[in-house]
Length: 440
Ligand SMILES: Cc1cc2nc3c(=O)[nH]c(=O)nc-3n(C[C@H](O)[C@H](O)[C@H](O)COP(=O)(O)OP(=O)(O)OC[C@H]3O[C@@H](n4cnc5c(N)ncnc54)[C@H](O)[C@@H]3O)c2cc1C
Figure (spheres, rainbow, N blue to C red):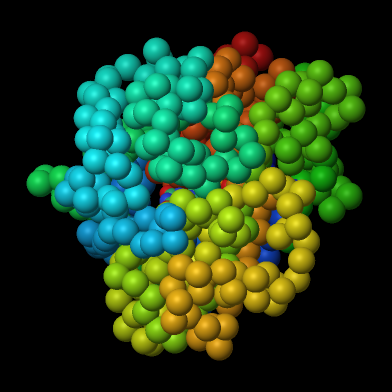
């Protein structure tokens, strides 16, 4: 039985890994020149670093298990970086409960209420009660207007942009739980994991292991269409030629899946269109000076043209990168936003002007090399009621499966959950194939 996989990001690579373990023949078709997808890297000082910032949480057990299985767990290192929050034109420390109590951007009663209500939300064990409510309505009610307007609305906007009002409270709950679970025993800091050599070490190890086990991977080979042939045997059109397979799994975002579907499945395409996406537009810059002590600075002021500033070299020491300091400027935006169209140098000029409003000593000539990365289908919008819309692995097209970040729910999407869905989907594909061969 042969499985064709569309996409060689961590989901596609892990899926292949799981399927060959079950004795299936696998071929991966990847549009880009290299595997990795959103984990693609560039080199700074001879060391790979992701184009999009990455870290793990201490409870990301699926990724941790995978690295053990691949024999690369010794490259995973744990850090306890500090966080900041820029709001009302000022930068505040935002790491520990003590920082929250001293957070001068909020009045004292609002801070006390925020502390108590966060603990309350984290004590709730069952997210299902929140599934049909929006984070905006629940958080406003629980933390109060001041903390909502000054903290949670900016955080929701940072991730979902104009869709912030519709985001599910179940997603927000999972996010609060995740941050609480990754805190150190005395709760003062978060423990974040990062690989020596960057997340690319996981991609490389998976690709090597797959190759050893006979997985074929075609690069620069975009899937152009899924066609329906014999019942139980979809085919894939790649570079104009039809590739036969017993099962096809798409690991790409839903807007891409929709474009691949045959016209006769317009009903299914419409169903998938119910999930909106926001894109990611991230600039990674080499900068000549450290800007702050913070790894991650959330931006609370809506008039700044970015959502977070991430000084990667405040988590991983700059010596790894030949002494270079690395800053990510992060944005989640609607896919038709002008930042997806303007040229990179123009974007960097605009970012540099605004970074100076956060760090007044910063100047454009502090930026050395830079890399701008854009993914218009980076983040599905997890709206209230999403549990009813979430696509299943099986699709209405026989032996055509979907396995992508839109199935990560209620957790915030991330590599850990990509590994989990890849395992689950591989088990489904395998079981269905066994069922079909018994029936045949
Ligand atoms: C800004 C940002 C920050 C993030 N931070 C973190 C973090 O800190 N921690 C964490 O764990 N996760 C983080 N993530 C999420 C993580 O990167 C993703 O969940 C994960 O990489 C998605 O993997 P994937 O394989 O599902 O999709 P992708 O990585 O998108 O892979 C899909 C692949 O399909 C290919 N493709 C597209 N169209 C076709 C086609 N027609 N035919 C064939 N191939 C095609 C693409 O080229 C790509 O290689 C972050 C993501 C972003 C954008």
